[in-house]
Length: 157
Image 1 (spheres, one colour):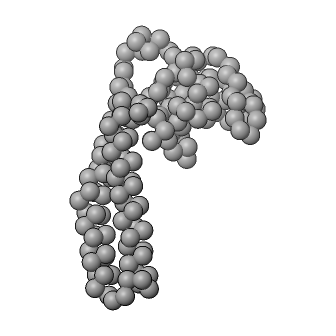
Image 2: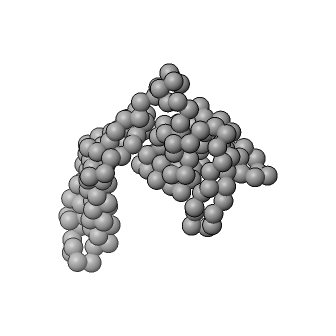
Image 3: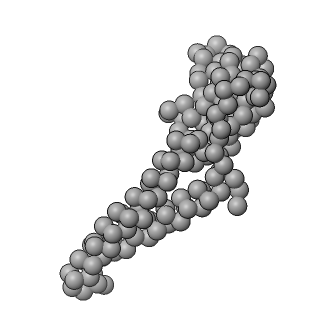
């Protein structure tokens, strides 16, 4: 099972989702199924089919979250910059600049927490992979599906 990198907050958020699904959502779906079964002919019962589909989704998500949390490695936030030696790693926040474009700020996180709209990119993404183990001042080539481009690392936080 591959390691999943998570921040403490990300781990907590996924754990809360798992707890909610196991306790509240499972019971809601069970109640819907019970009501649908009492509604008559199961073969033609759309509510029953919808509840069965939701049950499958909930159980699948519970299994997925269980696997993510079981293989999770918490990203430690180190305040001692000498330990990091300025290298970008999972958990680092970086400011990059693409040629004539504006500066952009990203935090490198595990795939389970990635949300580019919030500035959180996966260590497995083309940009995330390219930035890992580099320092401020380095120019990095990113091999993305849309083509190759270069970014300059302005700052590592």
